[in-house]
Every structure is written in structure tokens, then in C-alpha cells.
Image (cartoon, rainbow, N blue to C red):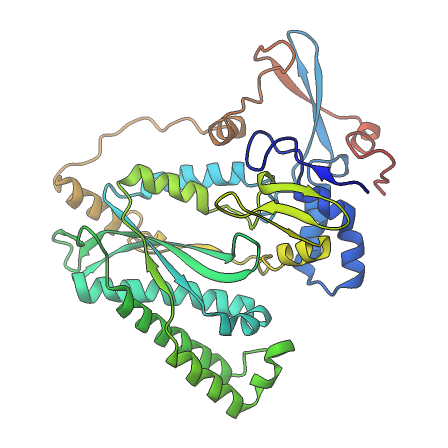
Length: 406
């Protein structure tokens, strides 16, 4: 197999290479020689069959010129690099009305590397603990420092730019909160939200208390490099080390306003570990992909697949969560009171207006990608209609030559 290059330089133009290409070339061998979870096997299958005849499809026919374009169904798996645009657009549309007209801060809570081995054996427990502890830390600081309830949206990420395991929580936090008696909006300082050193200490204490409770209750699983931690004395020594170390909590500069928050959420909420646009080339010797600042990294195909699958989340795990004013329980109560206090219109009532027509998936796809799928690629007119594909076509077209779909 010769090296397969990208159609254009990394990150520019339409990507020719896809993660699916690497999985199709090396995925079967990897699955046969490695132990995978059910979720990881499902991701491998979804990515390799996404938008191929295996999943069936339809035929777009132009009513103006008669041009026919076969198109195949998406796998809709949340780990697939090709299936996030529509989900992202729909999510953002639903969240737009909950963004308050105020400044927001971006706070990142990161787990130390000493925890990573144990996290991999207890992903659901530790991911839950990370998001809950980060949010409780912020809510308590809002209560004690501002005497107010703040709004928080958290997003779990587990990767670095080179796909290494790096669990951390991105938190978008209102720069202020609704006073506890709901009498006013209390603004935070202009340059920082809360002291990061103090937040780090509280976050560490809350998280490790949760880890200790899980150990005492017998809810932790041990294996591999962390097998020795099953012994109580070894676990106690390990915990003392974690308490002595500084934990990283990073607060970025505040966003300029709601529009910047909206754009930021659009980039982060439905991101996967690696997008197709970051792929540069691959062959039997290695997969090359871009990292940051114009740099690239090359790893063997099996290592690339291993790293990619590190970030498959537990089944039905909710990676985007909302707390405080952003929580669902406050969506029609405290959140609206906070909006009125910010705008200075306590007595004003929103004017009744006709509900907007629901957007089609074509509308959302156009907003997310800039591509109008109703336009015929041959004549340029908006006249594509959708017809089902014959069964024989669904299972023979658009697959690499010689590939068996059985």
C-alpha cells in the first residue's frame, strides 16, 4: 500500500482523507489482535460504514436537468468525524435562547496524569465525578464570593491535540449571577471570575473525597498499571501524593459577549478527538496528522487507532451538562428573571410572536457547513428531489473497488 496523501495541505480545502479510510485499511486487524469494549467495536463499525451503501441511502434527482446524485445515510455516531455538523447545529439552535446577554468566562478543570490509569478502568464514574465536582466548585464560589447563583455549561473532553488521553472539563460560566434573593444581577470582576488557586484547592478536595468514597464503597475497578492500588495501604499512599500535588484549573479571558459564547460552544460541544481535516497522509508505516502551530505527528496505524478509541465514551454518557441558571429546572424561572435583571426591564413582558417555522436538516446543514444540498451540482438550480435507491444499488455503489459489503 502506497502513501495516501491529502488532496490539499492539512486543514485547507475539502479533506480527501478520512478517519474511516484508516479504519477500513487497518481496523479489522486491530480488532482481531486487541481487546475492545462493546462501545469501541460499535464505533469502529459505525465509522467504517458511515455514508456507504451498507447503511442504505437515497437518490437526489434534479427536476431541472435530470442529473442524479446517489447519497448514503450517516451512521449518526457521536464519535464519527462526519456526523457532527447537524447534531451541533440542532443543539445550538435549542441552546441559543438560554444564553444570557452578559459576559462569560471559560474555565478548564484538568485531572492530573497520576489519575489517568485508574480513570481508564472507571471511565463513567470518573467522568461523572469530574463534571459534577467542577460544577459544584464553581457554584459554591458563586454563592460565597458573589452571593449569587451563576450559570454553567460543562463539556467533557478527553484528548490532547496528538490524541493522548487527557480528561478535562471545559466550563462556560456567566460573569456574575442572580442574587440569592433574586433582587438583582451581581456582576463579577471584569478581568477574572474567581481566584484559580483557590478553585484548584477546592476542586482537588472535592474530587479526591469522591474518589475515596468510591474506593470505600467498593465501586472502583483496578487493573493494568493501577492494579497495585487495590491494596489499602498503596491506595492511601497514592491519595496522599495526589493531595500534595497542585491541580490545574485555568481561567481564560472573558468572552466579549453572547455571540462569542455561541460561536465558542459551536466549536467545542460536538468536537471529536480528531477531525478529517487534520489528516495529512497514511500508509502501513504511519498516519500523519496535524497538531498545532503548523506541526504534525506521525504514529503507526495501530497506535493511531488505539489513541482514537481511547476517547470513546461509555454508552449513553452525557458529556454536555448544564448547572445553576443554565439547568433545565431554571430555564423558565430563574434564568428569565436573570435576563430581565441584566436588561433592566423587570416589569417588561416578552411580546407575543408567532413561533418560528421549524428548520429542516437542509437549513441546519447550510448554516453549519455553508453547503446548500438542494442545489444541483450540474446545473446550479435548486431542484433536487429525493427518491429511494433500489436495493441492488444500495449495496454495490460507492464502495472501494473489490470491497465486499457482506
